[in-house]
Length: 82
Image 1 (tube, rainbow, N blue to C red):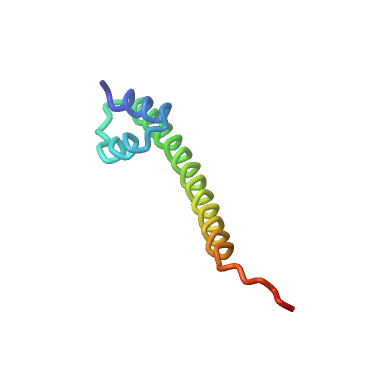
Image 2: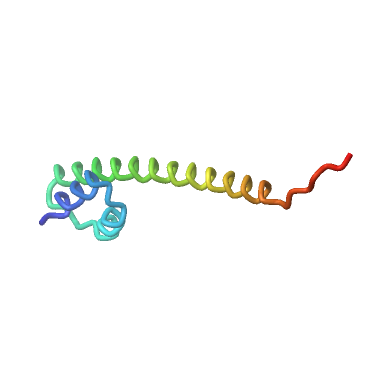
């Protein structure tokens, strides 16, 4: 299977591992059309990776807030004896 076809499939499936592996092994292309196609695919991969980066950051922030809430809400209960 050609690199372009494999890369296209990885992008459609949003397979981050395969995208990374394929980026590391970009071949020399024989035609300008292949090079332009590869450039467009790489741009799309960058868009997908940026979206995933933002989603991961958002999930980490939510986890941080949840952990902080759990840590503060699990303090021992002390009854007020006015």
